[in-house]
Length: 153
Length: 291
Image 1 (spheres, each protein chain N blue to C red):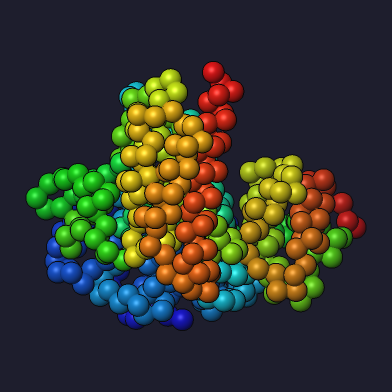
Image 2 (image 1 turned 90 degrees about the vertical axis):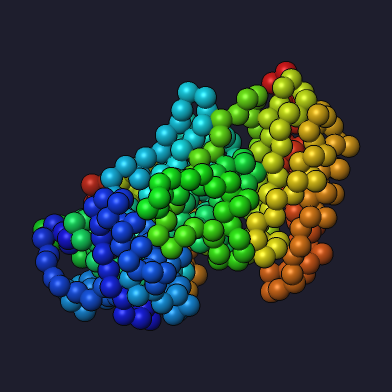
């Protein structure tokens, strides 16, 4: 599979979940392992540009596919606009849900660069922020939509 | 949580997949989207010895609309594909109404309609839609293909009629003969939770007369409830408030809910009654405006 633009080849046990492959085999611990039951969405990564819950995908199923994790958002020292938006609008408190939220926000903006608040709420509706900071998360994604080139120094 | 150990094969042809299932002698499972099977395996409710991953099989991702309005949904068509298929929604509005309510948006990336039918969860949404539309499943095994009406396909909670060496390759929604209307409503405590109750309504109208009706309920029985009495209350009649009330009464009567943390049996029947009334009233108001 390709992970964050790099081709990765490993022999893995069939039962290894994608979230554990990313974290334990590749050391990409930005992807969090949360509820483990496909509810919380902190493990969201992009699979061929669409968000998936990596606790509910077998690593072997990602063979031949393109996977992007939160580590791919920063580019040459520059944070992605969604990361900047979360900083500007206090989109994170404890930070546990953040990597999943950032990835589904990125996927949403790639498809719909100017989403309404309702569209953003729908896009993150399969994810849980246990700090209940949803309003700030929605504002953060809107900030990113309004600043497609970023802009925080 | 890890699934038990299992062998994994990702065949490139359907014949190869069927051969693997045949040799698996009932201990093999088909893996499509995996959004129900993988969680079940992690909980060790399902412990197949072999997973046959059909994601690499060519052609199964096809979502086709034929000239007569027939819709063919391949086994690898994801909920998300159906959510974005405007041409399908125009032919069958009930599909367009249900697609954005399946699971949550991220699960919809991977999960499939055909997989959902095979999984046969009594609280599944697509089975109600396909039942309301009188759809069928096309299965292929070593002996060839067969078409299985949805009512015969599901045999009980989490049980279907497929032989161990058959693959459900597509679901087919027959083309309508008259003007189509319908809708899907679901009550859930939060996005992604199982339905407290859900209702799929698909009707056809010739002028103001209902010529065909399908009403199916989810979450209110040990399997999808085909509320035939509710449908019969509509056929041959106009969508008057009396006809709508009769259909809603019959649907609530057909529901067989059990009380749980999502609500009492009476409450769920009430929800079904409300949903049938709401969908049909909307259809009736819309067609009056169009006339």
